[in-house]
Amino acid sequence: MHVCSVYAASRDDREDLFQEIAIQIWRSLPHFRGEASLSTWIYRIALNIAMRFQEKQHRSNAALRSAEAWFTYDESTPDEALDERIEHLRHCIHNLPERQRNVVVLFMEDCSQREIAATLELSESNVGVMLSRIKPVLLKCMNALTKHYTSTIANQHNAAKGGT
Image (cartoon, rainbow, N blue to C red; front, side):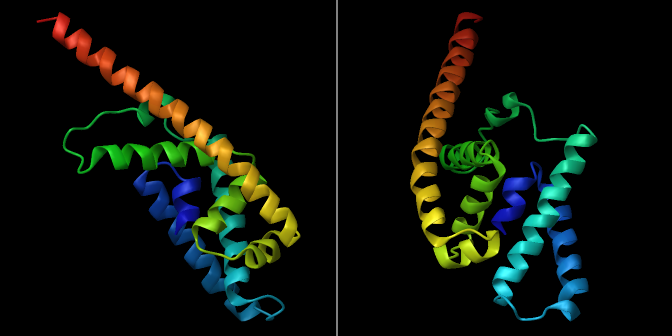
């Protein structure tokens, strides 16, 4: 679930968040009234739990990894370039304002603009406008992170080369 990967930094945190969401959905299922689609109802629960989870993380000083962690170079990682781009995207999405972040998360879950609008209580046109405005922001952020990552790796390489 993309909600977990956007709102939690580590694998353990993502698993914990997923478990919290699943438990809350299970507990709330008897109260489902059918006023919205089941998927819309589930996304509302997931986003609410994720936002609360993130608030707890910030309060306990266990927020997302420091910026340096986004640029950790691990040669053992398969397809490291793709993995880095995914981490950069997560970082960029995390830094969006909350409402925009929620729109992106639901979009990544293949929700239609109608479903996103219903889940977040927005108009469909508002969702469309937000998506079109968010895309260049994410691209700019991704390019900046990629440029920073590339220069960091080059500097590490040059330092290692000069040290021998």
